[in-house]
Image (cartoon, rainbow, N blue to C red; front, side, top):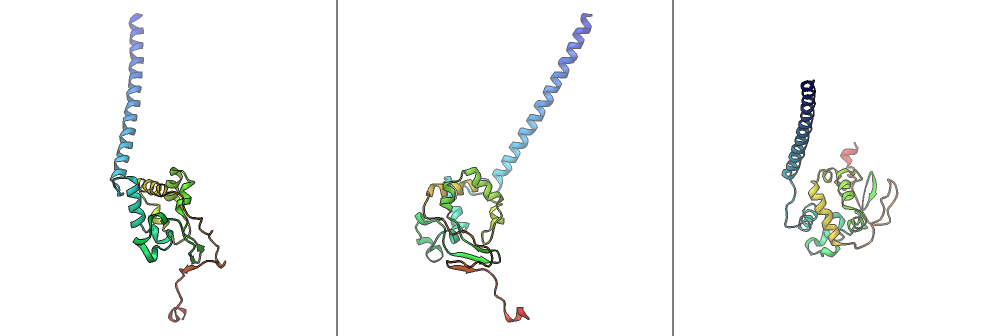
Amino acid sequence: MNGIIALTASRESLRLAGASLSILGLAACAEADGAERAAASDRAPHVQAASDIEAGRYLVTTGGCNDCHTKGWDVAADATPESTWLTGTEVGWQGPWGTTYPSNLRLLVDGMPEEAFVEMLRTRKDRPPMPWMNVNRMHEADARSLYRFIKWLGPAGKPAPLALPPGENPRTAFIPMAPPMTTAAAD
């Protein structure tokens, strides 16, 4: 009888040991998969700089953010003081979607947690001319650097005007984005 009990206990121990090894194996596979995804993410193209602030500054400059979101950038570019960057403008962009205005990113970021900003850049689909389809593809590290740079600049300026629906005339200057019809195209 003692031999049978010992054999039963031994089978139960083996079964538990096997289950434990299976769980450990699954955990190791999951960990390896996570590490592989993280390594792949690190290999994906993104800015590497001495700091997140420098990476964000580079992204703002080369990504063309100032082109729309900084008043006077179109005429002064490099002469525009960094203290005025990304404060939005009152010049709208008008097209079939209505009229949109480049937002004051410094005020936007001031009241937004980093995670919410990163999620917005990943998922937002909005009116032109903002190239959301490109921004949605931004590497997470770049989105975080962008946020940290804007946050580092600090709040400044005033909110941009609200977007207007099609057919409503803006009270500010605007840039028309509808292609003109030519005589040849009208025929």
